Image (cartoon, rainbow, N blue to C red; front, side):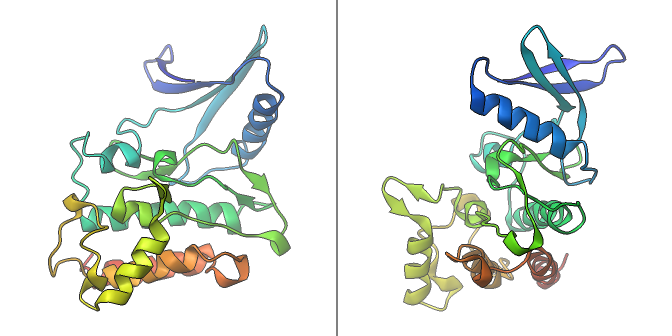
Length: 235
């Protein structure tokens, strides 16, 4: 459970309370503390403190006012998730993950990156959150699978028995005009000539969804490609 609270000086905080009596919860809690105390990056949520008291296990984070990207993709927030905003979200999350992969020692692989684990602060800066399933891995074992297609479809990888990756691949084979993705794109993204770089974004997303790690791009390669796609869009 996650609660909103405040410190005596008025700073808003998010308090994550681990479920009592579960071995898995205790292990994930310990992992999260160990990882977050080593992490300092503008695109990764900041740990303010933690607490063990009378059997309670709590993590205290900076409070991220605009909530999850998943919430914004659902249309329930005032944030306009147009094409450029989605690219900025992808790039911010990629930079946070690249930091975890390349600049933290030992490297950290998040393992549960999805729209509900990406937050937006008051200035719409991306914050990757929730390291409960993260693992410190050696360079030889570095793998990742990032669900970038969720940003343009607002759908889970498997929804109503359908695999979104398979649907996107089928749409790509129909036509070269925007890969004929009209039926799978989330409507508020817009469908016009202004979606510059969409095809490259889809290509990159599908490369990230390859079954084996050696066929997927590194986070550094993903960041560079997203930066180029944003240049195509005029950012």
